Length: 467
Image (cartoon, rainbow, N blue to C red; front, side, top):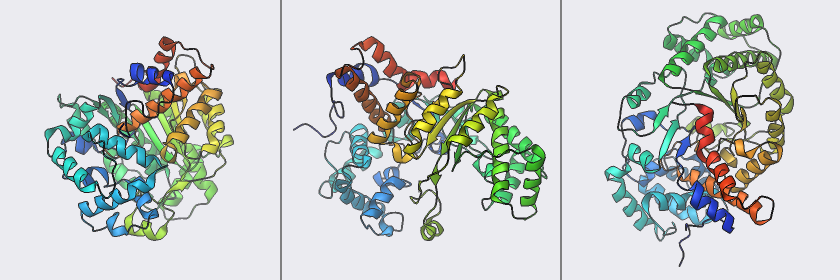
């Protein structure tokens, strides 16, 4: 009987099979955006058991288990790792139709060579088999990165981070991948969030600049960006509900900053003004450094107040926002472009209804000398599943150029997530292969194979210029 994860999994035409097996399959991985721990890479961490590497911190799995009514003690609570794994094993058969079913079995196959379907009956055998392998040297963080031929890893890092682990990685010749920090200054931009003033103080300490006014704040951010650059950073990232765009002078932003610093309340308009001015400053800074800027737009976070107070952020209580995007997005990009200070930019939106807004906006600001300077980013978060990826890529192809796309990323905290690149590549090859079979693209494998390899790796390598 053919295993569930077989050689031609998700490849529905002969052309798709040729493109995947002969062109996509063996390409290296360029994971330019993830949430892996540089500490765990630097220290070459091993994992005690399958739950520790697979379930800890995975809010995708947690949401599914909660939907099935699993007690929170066996999701994020005090249950043992084995008890939590057993509950996940019981849940897996009920996830058919959700990408978790595919990811689960791809990860079991690619890391542990398991063809069994995970369920309550197979859970003990799979638990014991995987745990035996996790005791070996082949399952340290560095060995897993090497196994999947990962060439670049972009972690996600706060400006106040010391980057000590990145420096340790840089000095370690045994680490085969280039691991670089990504500059994520959300806490300096989100002026209305609790903890802003405390964060400003920490930023001042990290930059050795006393932040008494807005000018000092910008100087501190610039100071940290240059430090990140020295350590190898070439990418920034912002997680924002929507693109803010309200006309704002430096003087206005300074007044708004002082209001918050002295404990005075600000209006929503003032918040948007401050965020607009600060993001424009950062965009120009990134352009001067030759960085790419990522904008992750459209998440409404921490919606369940009871569970947020119990578990904190990033625990599975975020969802898709519905927002006005077209006007502020175009205005924001235009403002940076006016003096040719628009950096390479990747736009991700959590709500697929905005695909055409983004797909048409990026065409307004492309530039000579850069292939796909403004990118429509890969299907993100709730969209990094088959339908979401197909829609993102076909919408990009219809409105722009799929051939210029910088491709997939894991956006994950787990070292077991590299098969997501395989998942993406199979879907990509199935799309293009389908065009061939329907007569919408030529059966020119040299042409299409190069396009596939560019999207899988080459475009990202050229775009980010991480040396």
